[in-house]
Amino acid sequence: MATVLHIDSSARPGRSGTDAHGSHTRRLTAHFIKTWKTLWPDDRVIYRDVGAEPPKPVSGAWVHAAFTKENQREPWMHEVLAESNALVDELLAADVIVAGVPMYNFGVPAQFKAYIDNIVRVGRTFGFERKGEEVDYWPMVPNAKKLMLLSSRGDVGYDRDDMLAASNHVEPSVRTPFAYIGITDVWSTAAEYDEYGGVRLQQSLEAAEDAITSKLNALYAESRKAA
Image 1 (cartoon, rainbow, N blue to C red):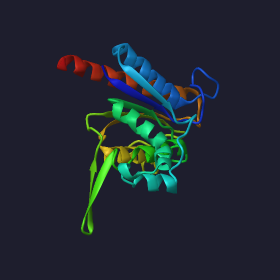
Image 2: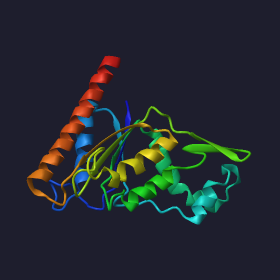
Image 3: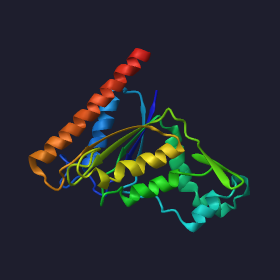
Image 4: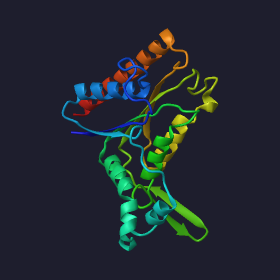
């Protein structure tokens, strides 16, 4: 039995296609979870809504506490790091992370950036050692985890080699820190045309849902062969 960590980060409540002005990424992650549970009904799902309940931004006190050895931390340090610890625990418990991350002004929502800042933790998800003037870093999260990144964009043409690819800072800004802590198996898809609406938006959403279904069916087929 696997554990799936389901993260939503959109500021929009509800889901497009169901709720007025609902979130496209919430729609895509819901489709992912529904399809996953159809294929693997016994798997566990952990839900974290950082869009509705954002993690606290990293502060000076947080940095002080995180870079203090655990056995030397004062009580207030443990309190400052409590939320980060909970987020890291969820991440470490998961075999698959599905993250709904819309594009806001070419990058990730501030809520999701706060999430990243809380899970990239020295001593918990990465380590480092000073060797003279050099520093060695290493990831601490098992590399077997999968990250499924589901996004949405107002315009069109942000995929690799497309006309706006250089302005897409969502996928790179998620892939880089996750790879840094050890998660390099990343798959992504996105819906576009949000600012256009109409048929093109609907077709893009349906194409993204179809891509999710195809990906999960392929993973299921692989798991059956390995069984």
